[in-house]
Length: 122
Image 1 (spheres, rainbow, N blue to C red):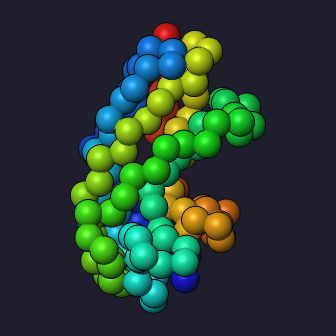
Image 2: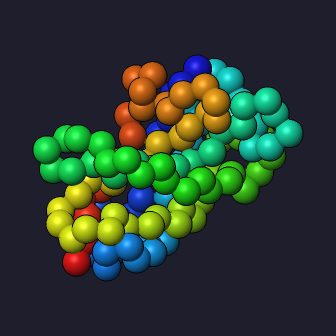
């Protein structure tokens, strides 16, 4: 059940090339199965991928942020701080934030709606 609701008070941001940005994110399990943080064969974490304005994904695998609770049950939410590392080249980008079940798939690749933010890298 790859279903998520991800929100943030941030809609766009600026960061220096290669710099770090901490993003406050609220994640909600809108699926029918619990998300396990650790101790599971395939834990569920929050992460991100960078895309150019042309829609092409950059070859950067985002850092992971762990849930604050060992299990996030269906219908439950969690406030997570996601540390984002900016691309090394200045420009305009789209940051796509989604849950990922490690070793299985990104939720957005299975039809879930990710959080998308516009970022200016200087």
